[in-house]
Amino acid sequence: MLVLEETVFYPEGGGQKCDIGTLTSSKGTFNVTDVRASSTEAPVEHITDAPYGTFEAGDEVSLSIDWDRRFSNMQRHTGEHLLSGVFHSMYGGVNKGFHMSKDYIAIDIDLDGRILSEDEVAAAEMRVNELIWMDLPVTQYSFPSYEESLVMPARKQVYHEGEITVVLIGDKESPADCIACCGTHVSSTGQIGLVSIRKSEPNKGMTRVFFDCGSNALYESIRDRRVVLEAAASYSCGRDDLLGRLEAERAKLAEQKTRTSELAAFCCDTEYERIITELPADKGSYPAVYFSKLLSSSELLKLGFRAAQKLPDGALIALSSESETQIILVSKGDVSCSEYVREYAPRFNGRGGGRPDNARISFPSKADVKAFTDFVCKTVL
Image (cartoon, rainbow, N blue to C red; front, side, top):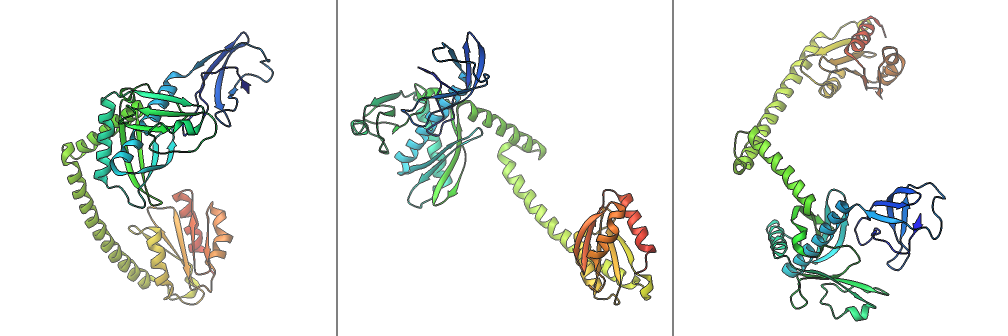
């Protein structure tokens, strides 16, 4: 960890991630992987990958930040200021939360419990981009104390001891935004490039808005366009017709789901009647095994509960779906299905468990299922 006399690296703070980059001296070039400071007045600590003991007090070093990362952070941080200012000027919303991650930025807009509508959010998105196109100046003012900073038309006054920096977008008479901030910012709104809102949703009585700025927003917009165009092409329609086609598809799937449920119920009844008809009358013929081409293991479990009521005392049956590698065991409970699984399933690589009246076994392959069911057919309870 290094503390330098001066630095160009921004430590993490104010919702913004720190700069990374390199540090070069006569002892070599090393990566700066983290930069932090406990407060705006505290020394900035540089975390590097240099071996312990590489540097000594008085060493001279040259610093180089990752500019792409820094500029992206500047675009995103200034974009967040501008969008928060728009929500405040248009609706009186107060930003009560700010989070900047790799994939998105989120802010929580407080309107005393009122949630912004989609139309209101869309209008704010249009307005913030209009301010970007105006290429308004972004100016930072430093004041020795909080009291002296009160000459600025900040949308929210936050007390702070010591020196304070206020970021103004536009002019003092009619600012697009003005707020105290210690982060890094672009010099004019045109450099933000774009603010794109991803979605908004209620969160603890506020409206949480997910968005991004600059190159991040552009990359997401390009990806969204590709997804939309590919989806439209798969339905052989244009972008404007896609939602209608998707709604029609949802309705069709709902009908198919209802139809499938009806057919499954019919199959279950048919299989139930088959199993009941084929149940051995002789107790010595149990366990018995039944296979189904159509029903799943979960459906066979429900069917097994019904069939168990017709079993003679001390009987157990195994039910298997031909499309899966699971076995369902059912009984009245007088023969413990779970004990049967514990004793025999491991011999055939099976794993499972359950209760005395039902159990489920999973096998690695259909060959293991067959080996187990062959064993069951030869076993007498």
